[in-house]
Structures are given as structure tokens and as C-alpha cells.
Length: 495
Image (cartoon, rainbow, N blue to C red):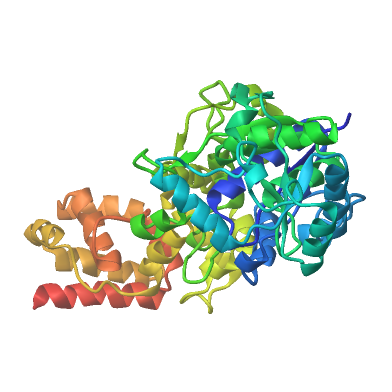
């Protein structure tokens, strides 16, 4: 049987980075097994739908370069790929369960259920609608056929799964091992809601069967639902797919699941793309391939010391046997480091083409050749592309202040003469590749330490001792700009 996996998000907001990790693991497994990766939009909870969320999910997967083989915007033979468009399928299948005595109509009003719940709580018990009390409730099991038919006409009902007593439910998870639950622990879950839409659990199982999903790879938060899903497969007598539940992505402190609020509080993105007022990984300057590399290491260990992987290498190395059980701590600094590595070996032309927005502020008059030369000079200092906008400031603006420690150091060596020497080099149009040689010759006559000479130049051009090779900076800055900055420092020292 061919491998078919699915990523099935709900369009109730932006795609969280945990969802991207789930999509990635599904994608890697499908490609490793030469199977199919399906996107299914689980929009059964119409009240929680957020406008634009589905488009966001599709755009995020496209930016990450993990697009589905089948989905709402892709060709496929197992559609529709939105659950809201599959209502007839759910209705047909749930009626089969009712006919077989494995599901029933329930007409209990919300206020009645709430009163029953409170009555149980007074006795120190928790209320579960199921095998131990269903015969005392208002449903098709306690009403006559005529009464049931009349109630159905009103449309005020749900359909519940009838869970049998005393059943051992065993299901194997390829990450967690055997999961064993007694049916007595389960309630009669709602399969179809009052609005005529299926619940997550019912639609999930029906769709996985209809779409011939062979492997269900999803987050650990769905592990408690696994026995229920196994039970639904069993009542239909459908073959069970293989399950893999991925470990949680934990907060950076290591305690608790990483939430959407954590990013705003701690200053790092949790979305692949911008959402509302929140910047995404893209807007912060992450390469999608670097982000995928980092996310692959959250809950999966390649078994080697290697940490940098192209997507092709990830597909080749991916092994579900190496998925870990324990939660994976989100480490933004590690993500930045991996992005730094990708920036260092990715061609500048590639970056300029894919991320033009980082080369616009103050650089609109620059040629592509100049932008590329400046980027190549700075890229080894970048962890995120947003850093480029800060680093490039030395090319765009004169120093606003000077490092006073450097001032005190160079003042002992007649810095005005040193700076005037560079002014003459510029006025005589001496190419910067010859400056070092000229400095060494002049240094022998002036008896000024070589380091002091170069520090004086750097101070004039950038204002402190940090930054890339100063001669390369001077080569890229216009002659008039360099002259202005040298004379500015001479004036500052004279005053």
C-alpha cells in the first residue's frame, strides 16, 4: 500500500510553529517513502473560523517549500479537502452506525446537561454521558420510535457514539508504544453536533479512511484521543492506519508547551509569516530552509553530530524510529545560529532575489552590484537578515558619536596627521587595495603603530572598532563620503 500522510490544521488563526513542525514531519516521511503529502482543512467548528486563516496556512506552507501533493488548491482524487464540503459523507456514515446500533440520537438540552453535571458534582462525582447513565437521559435509546421521530423533526439533537461496556481497547503508537484503555473509562462522544456538522473526532476518522491515509503523524496533544479513534475505526470495521504522536515543543525555559503568547513576551516569533501585529520568522529574516532544519531537530535526532541539513538531506536521513518521546525545548538562539550557518553558505544573489525587502531601506539608489558587494562583506556577521539593516548603517550614515576609549588611545599619536594621510590617499585616487602597503611605508617614517593608524581610519569611518574589514568598507563607500567622515573626525579632535 502506498504511503499517504496528511496535515490537517483548523483555520482558527495563524499556523503556530508547532503546526509547521507537524507538517514538516509528515512531508519528510511522505517524501522518504515516495508517498503523498495531503493538506486537509478541518473547518467543522464554524464558530471559531477566522477569516484569512486558511489562506495563511497555504501561504505559510508555500513559503516553507513544503507544499502538499493534494489539497484545497492542488489536484487530487480524494477531495473535497475542506471538511465543511464533506458533510454528506459524514451524514451517510453516521446513519450506518445508527442502523447498526452503534450510535444514537440524544435530545438533552444544554441546561438539562448542566443541571445533571452540577448534581453529580454535589455527590463528588464527575458527569460523563455514557454507558452508566445513558438509559436515564433523553435519547433514542429511552424513547419510542414515534417519540424519537418527532424529536428528530425539531432538529434539536446530537448523535452520540454508543460505547460498549467492558471492552479492552489496544492501539499501537510507533513512538509511544502500546496504548491500552478500558471502554468503561470513555464517555459516549458526540459524533454529529446540533448544527449538523461532525465533531473533530468523527470527521477525522471518516476522512482518514476515505482519503486512504496510511500513517497519521500528529502532535502529542492528540494522544488521549487515540483510543476513541481506534474505537470508531472498529465500529466501522475499517483498517487502522499507523499512528505516530510527536513530542510537544516546550517553552524555552523547558516547562510547559510553547504557546503563541510566549513569543510576544520573550521577543521571538512563533509564526512562519506575519500575523496581525506579530512578525513571523520570514519578517525577522529567517531562511525557510534554515527554519525547517531547526524544526526537524525538535523531537527528532539523526543519531549523529551533524546539525546542518538541506531539505534533501533531511528527507534522506529521516527515520521515524529516531523520533523522541520527550518534549523538545524551543531554543531561539539555536535557531538563529542555524540560520547564520545557512546565510554564510547561501549565494548572495539568491538572498537578494528571494528577500528584496531587506535591501530597500536607504538603499534604493544602490545598484544590485553594490547591494551584493555590501551583503557579501557583511553576511558572516549576520544571524538574521534583519541584522543586515542594522549592519549596513555604516554605509548609509556618518558616525553620530565616537568611541571615547579609542579617542584617548589615538590622541597620543597625532591622529590629525594620520587622518590627513588617508585624505591625501583619497584625493590622489589611490585604490584601497594599495592602502595597506602605503600605510606600512608611511608607518616606518612616522613611527606611528600600524594598529593606531588603522584604528584611526576605522574610528573616522564607522565611529568605533567593530565591523567588517575597514579597507573593504572604504572601497564600497563613495570617495566624497569617506573624505567627509575623515574631515569630520579631524574637526572633532581639533575642538
